[in-house]
Image (cartoon, rainbow over all chains, first blue to last red; front, side):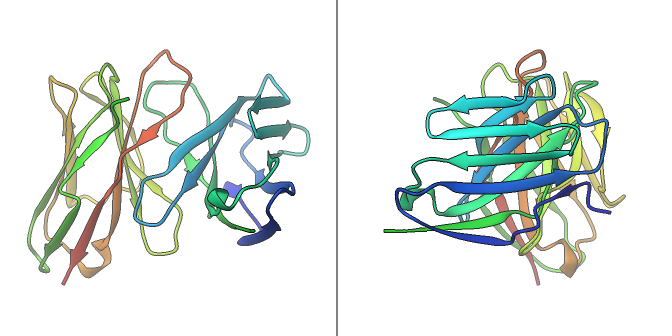
Length: 114
Length: 113
């Protein structure tokens, strides 16, 4: 049973526009959420995170929104750039002890065209 | 900035052979995680260590074992390799008491023939 779901396998956006990537989760124990970006043949690169005590976190062009009641989070990229083209993974964890695993969604492939 | 180092980057083994993957965490990071990513799949958690003790355990086969050493590097030992073990193996590190982000290495691509 997939605890973290990214229902859109792919997203295509034009350069300069907004990219919105969505993620849903089912486990109410999750209290920390992260977005990773991954290029082929490389490891996931940490982008941005949010604690469950917040509903928004912003870092430059990247903003993550969390709706706890809906168990939904989204990553906004504004403006989108061709270099943003990659696979984006949503991940969640319940931070109750050191070494707790991240649970990943299946990823969304973002393509930004110039 | 220093990143997570994994070696080797590529490894080809035959069925029933053994393999050892190594991971060197970011300096001062005390927690190490191992993940397996099959083709077109999301990373699946295998095992983690905090201060050289096993912390959390995921879907790691009994044929696999791992440990974290006094210098915080970690090794994943895989025995009786099967074709289905072919995957990317990522190591990630984190600093306990930090902000919970895990930083991933470039991965080891294991191919079992």
